[in-house]
Amino acid sequence: MFGSKENTREAVLTAQAPQPIGPYSQAIKAGGFVFCSGAIALDARTGQLAASDIEGQTRKVMENLKAVVEASGSSLDKIVKTTIFLKSMNDFPKVNEIYGSYFGAIAPARSTVEVSRLPKDVLVEVEAIALQ
Image 1 (cartoon, rainbow, N blue to C red):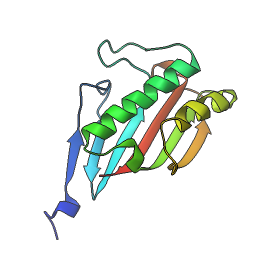
Image 2 (image 1 turned 135 degrees about the horizontal axis):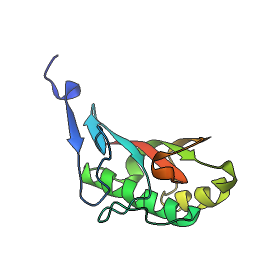
Image 3 (image 1 turned 30 degrees about the horizontal axis):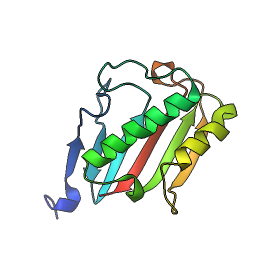
């Protein structure tokens, strides 16, 4: 039925995560899900890269993702799927350890891919889908 809650979408925007640097939303709530755009390691206050190493960037990415998910009314434990984009798969063990510390006993389904380049030349980006 057109106009029902199932057919609506709502943008999520929080000052606790970096503002979009293009024509996209931090997340969209639709159909009982939250679709989060890729989170990178920018500081929400300054818009600058928060760390230069993979460990610091991964922690900041996960904190930014957490802020967006929580602003949507959801939480990290309701994330059902993530995609991790890495500049180098050599960083996978470090990213995996930090990433895993943000989830409980039931980790989300996940894909991890190596890419040639990411926005702002960051080392890692994570996108997610969560239940509302």
